[in-house]
Image 1: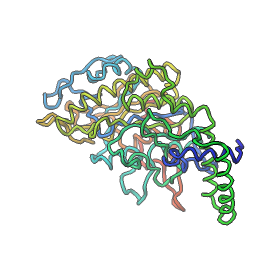
Image 2 (image 1 turned 30 degrees about the vertical axis):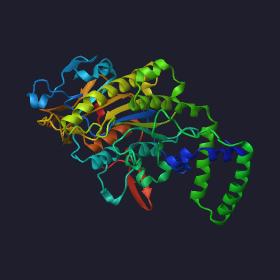
Image 3 (image 1 turned 90 degrees about the vertical axis):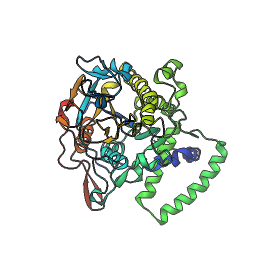
Length: 432
């Protein structure tokens, strides 16, 4: 698509897009060689429960265990015979035939930051002396690029450190061109997506910018300079494209917005559905409705999870799955529910549970996943994995496989080849 100087200069109105880091993401990628095996999943929505939800209190309940392990919640039957989940997920219970529960996660990293990185990248902190890309950056870098008028990767919602978005969006060694578009407030969309000054003024500014940029390019020709031009072009294309309306939740009916919920997580799920509908390949929605998120160390924190996090999750995720299904998008959209680890089997005296990475649970739906099943098994107290353990590397290889990314893909950092997925992965073949 060829754009005039005047149209290119309209980019001046998207200061928020530039600040998000997405402009760097939009650099030219034609030189990359994508590897895309056959896969049903074209898009992915990652629902991240920041802080680490308890497997005992959600999808791997132990009703026959002692009180100090079982906890306060009762199990309820789901739409899958023999599968029970927490009573707090009454809406999700009706949709579990669309999902597969993986109860064998065993990752061994129990500190928030390191565990979050490990589960997003498949590499432990400091491994090989490199910074590794987060999941969305990795997947979108290894696959053919998205249409030029949509971002490749969007992150939205609330997380445990909202003042620092690098906390959830690092492209690692892939570089800034693979940084996602950050939409901190899913209900707010992208500020300044439309020009805020008259066209004539844009044209005047563009003439100056064009002269300066042209001189710089002649004196210092480099790939980075050309990449910046590509970034500008794609940003303008988003401004011109009707797909930009996907960021405006007000265009949804009141009934739909009500179904997802009047809270950041529900709005994030609705935004995710709108984005995959227009072709955005990867969307990550963070859920941390309080300062502690799902990090239920104390009784007070556990109460916040009970009264805020769990009802919001039940409403938002169930609305998302049902909506994707109704619109014919679930078969091509992989949905993953997870946190960075689980919680300790034994409930503390005050009602809290501590970090626990030895045995925990994640949930997959859509994207060609064989649904209505449970994969893996923990012991009677939920303390150890008895069947089908899944490591962080296994998990990453599974996600990549479902999304059509060859796990043998290599990137180059200087002269150094770096595997997308570390060696020794055993993908969860039972999912497909």
